[in-house]
Amino acid sequence: MPELTQPEPAPAPPARPASEGDRTMAATADPTSTAASTATVTTPASASQSASEPTSTPTPTPTPKASTATPEPAHTTAAATTPPGGGGAGDRSLDGQPPVGGRRGARGVLLAIGVLLAAALALGAGTQAIKLTTGEERRDERITLPASVDRLEVRASSGTLTLTGTPDDAAVVDAKLTGTVHPPTLKVDIDGHTARVHTDCSWQMLLSCDATLRLAVPAGVTVVARSSSGDIRAAGLAGPIDLHTSSGDVSADGCSGTARLSTSSGDVRATHLGAATVYAHSSSGDVKVDLTVAPTDVEATTSSGNVRVTVPAGSETYDATANTSSGDDSVRVATDPRSARRIEARSSSGDVSIRYADAGQAS
Image 1: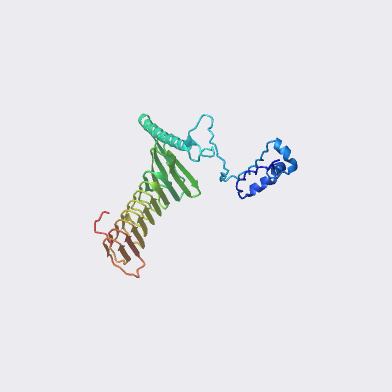
Image 2: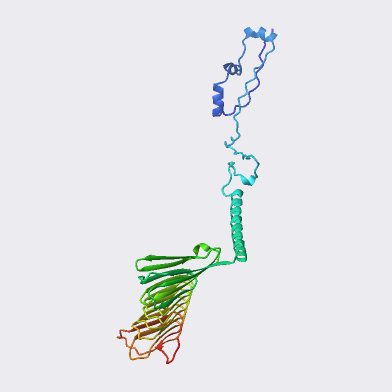
């Protein structure tokens, strides 16, 4: 009988080099699948069985292919959450939280500015309304100080301060106080032999405020006066004086005690002084010192302005110097650098002169 031969199995696809993943998967595959993929030759003893049954060629199990796609990096997307009541994209950051200094903060700043402006306008309008309806309030006060006072310390916020000599034994304070709604306050404190007189306008802010003080000063009383804004005028005082204003003129006429006169902005004018010692200074303004007695020490200076010192004609000699950085300087009195009588006149910008008083001169 003819010899039966088993058909050759179909050639397997070329083997691909196994990756690490393939080897792992093959190691865990079903053993029966591995056996089925192996080709075997049947023996003649089984030929009859093979002839009666169609021979099926086992289909090799395909080897799983390793994925060649690059894995996507893991990441988390933060979802913006919308608060109740809504909210635009510009009001939220990526993490769902309101940005620092966002629109709400800007609206708050604008609202605060608007409130402040409205308050300022209302205050200004209220002040004008008060002036139109009630006008300014004025009040006069007079205080007589104890006769034991031998030192006066005066401090004024604004207004003119006048100091006048008196033959009486006690000093007297006269105050004219003017202000919108309320006038400034006047305070007098007595501490031993010292009297402190004080006027205050600082709390008035935008409201008008003025305090005019007149003090009658007995002979021999020391006066120290300070003003923030206003002129200081002294006349006929027979004691040491120290007068200073931040803005305004300072004048002294007919005073006979040691005089210290100064202003930050304004003129200094000392006339008919019978003082042996005079210090006069201005940061911006003219300085004039006219003496009726031969002085022992005079210093007159300004940063910007003219300086003039006059002394009575006589036989005295002076250690006198006149200097200016910009302007003319002249010394027209008898000089001697060894003299105990010193006169110094100085200006950074302006004319400087030291001379004798002219006959009949009214300074």
